[in-house]
Length: 196
Image (cartoon, rainbow, N blue to C red; front, side, top):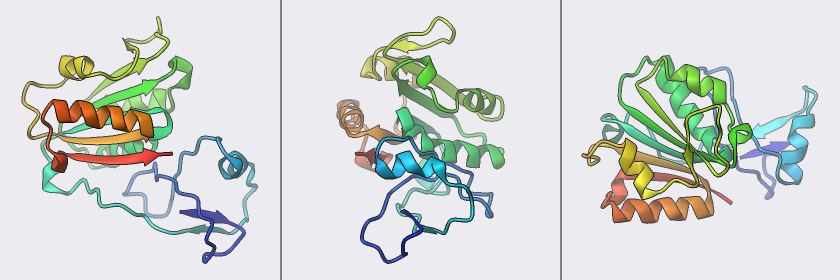
């Protein structure tokens, strides 16, 4: 939760996901899309303002046994923020577990961290699947939305050892959870962060 120039005890708080590596202790990095009053004005900070940060919250850990055999990362739009934290942390650790990133966006220009994600592919066992509503001729991508067919085309046949991390707008999360239920992915294999 972030507040600026108010009080750490205010009732009005703004939730954001950390997007930086867990190993860089002297830096807190957030990736914020300008959508509302607070998120639209946060980019106008000059430096020197008092910023109150409360958290982090949640219970997802890359050290958890259930994540060690591989991760399927499902992101929609700015939902890439916590996934970037995961990828940056794993790259810092020189981690070798298999990673599958399904990243849905409207078009190629909407892809946040496009160059860094491609660079992370050289440091990790990372397969990137861009899914664009408006397909691109510049990058390899799937057309439309992330579907069960798209998942099955790229994931290994055996998924019982993989952990699924979802982050994006609520309609996307609901659609992904339905698909995962149909694929008989157990609830303890799924972690979701919902953006509303």
